[in-house]
Image 1 (cartoon, rainbow, N blue to C red):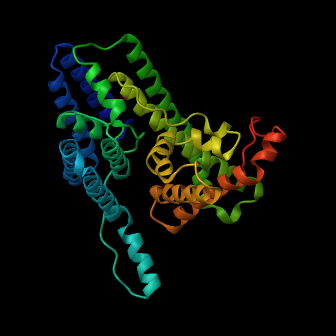
Image 2 (image 1 turned 180 degrees about the horizontal axis):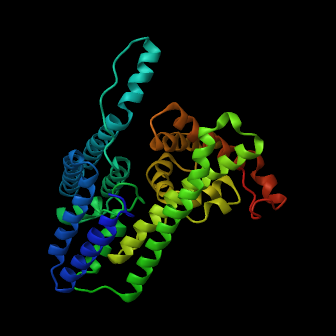
Image 3 (image 1 turned 90 degrees about the vertical axis):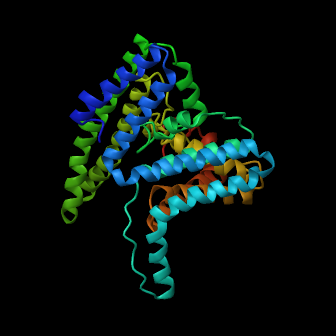
Length: 363
């Protein structure tokens, strides 16, 4: 179900917001959470009902592993390994199994047939959210949640299919904080404004640029240098306004429920460097990789060689997170190499000559 569909706009959204606040205002916090869980599962199941047991199984598995970490502190490490294997195994099977088989066939000259797999909606997003939960539990976060609270967080319908990647210690405390309260006029106004801005970006602006991009891909032989540049820019702007618009809509819905969801875009096309661009684009994904991959590898508090290794690992993983294919891996490594060049070869020159800081972009 899309956010801009009539069913969502005039049925699911107003009913869910009204029901959430009515139940909370009357002091039925747990009932409100149960209502929100049903709404979120209905939203998710509308995309493909077959994926619903997978989402529920993933939620239950991670919740139980997290609980076990609290009850068995000496077994935290093997439990974390179990949780990581379960999450990454599930993601790997659905998203990368055929990519692995294709490359295996190429390397060995075999002809193993592809698996008939459909990619479950939002699996990359809800898997990363739950890995973050398990790692935080391993690090000592008390995270004493009920199963209902945890299930509401993971399945929360504005984020479950396309992000932004929210974190348990951001959302669940806010879920608890609204119990016994009613909506604020400011929160509703801000939510409606963000949601409306997102619809405008996604439905009006992104569609307009998408028309130009579609025309270009359909008429490649007829393009000259000027029209090719225009098509490329149209496609870039289509991607930005589409994804940014969706995230604004999700954040607006969160506001309607009394939640502040994390910002995902901050004018990335005005960035003055590659590093600055990736601090502004898909910010929640960048936060996840920084906190749960880059820093555990040592971040930049290591030798130059290891720092370069860390950047390449993170950006290689960022690439394949976006899609299963060599092109995605190369795309991620391309940005990793650009960041390395910027930091170690030309960053000092750019700062010295005051290029960085004056909207100079290397993309």
